[in-house]
Length: 385
Ligand SMILES: Cc1ncc(COP(=O)(O)O)c(C=O)c1O
Image (cartoon, rainbow, N blue to C red; front, side):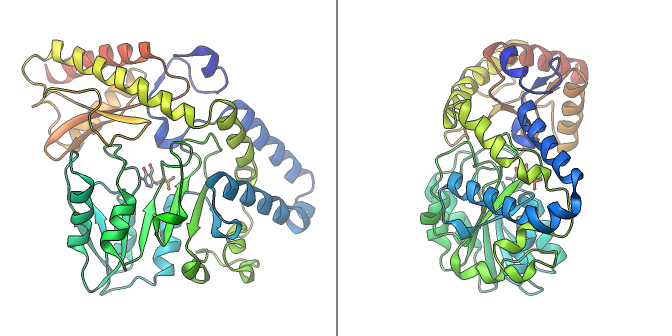
């Protein structure tokens, strides 16, 4: 672990944090900035909420649109992508008799949210090694006459794959597309408007070092009038995006500290962080695979460190030995045992195979994957010997 970097965070230095894409890591300076906002609010809450917070939040929103490279009024501040899903399903007025298309790599909450509105969910299946054309065709094949929305994850959560968003948008046109870009901000060059999607939402708290509960929803112009907050507050008359700034009285300190998170990201290399993560993961995944192959000879598929070809910068799959983890429950059990031993790195069971999803971050170095491999082998032996 790079201790000089870890010192910038309050994260437990005895734990190996290899899943920062899940809930992010908030630097001390950003937590301090959030605390300063909290102190300022507390000093005179009435003045802050009546006179000050609206301009402050608008400035934050403008900073976020600059960061995302989009027009000022195209982005609403949201707490997370889950919140964006609710806004979007309301905007398209999804109801019983309609359906949406997701993939079998998609984050599950959007299908759950469609279900609560009585809509059906059609699932596009494709393998980890599928080509762009195969992925686009898998989505297009599920589109039917009642399809109201296609949801494509720019980076998938279970396998950490980058999907060909533009090809999917073209393949399913004219059905509107929601791009779940929860992992995109801070990890990849963004070019949102030309994607041709109707909605695009990202978390900032995953990879941009902002406080938890900070994200952004971009909406294409024709949909903005309908993309309103779930909560009607006394600023609802502002419409999109201003109405999203103020969902009634909440703690705004996280939102207001977004610029400090973005400053931290930029000061530590910006997209260079993601490039380094990618390189580290090539080395780390090969190392973990080698150690697994020595410990479990004969049960491990071969491995090329650049696999899967469409791996996202901050996450990488390594296949686990056959016959050990055979269900999502087994994977959850191994996760818990690894966590007990101070390792945060999720195993997954997917398409009949098991994997470990390695992560990386500014604080990680090559030796961390050594420790991961050693603990993983001991854990698997302990559970499945
Ligand atoms: C692809 C994807 N979409 C959506 C989410 C939901 O994020 P949140 O819980 O911050 O709303 C996640 C969280 O990990 C994710 O990986």
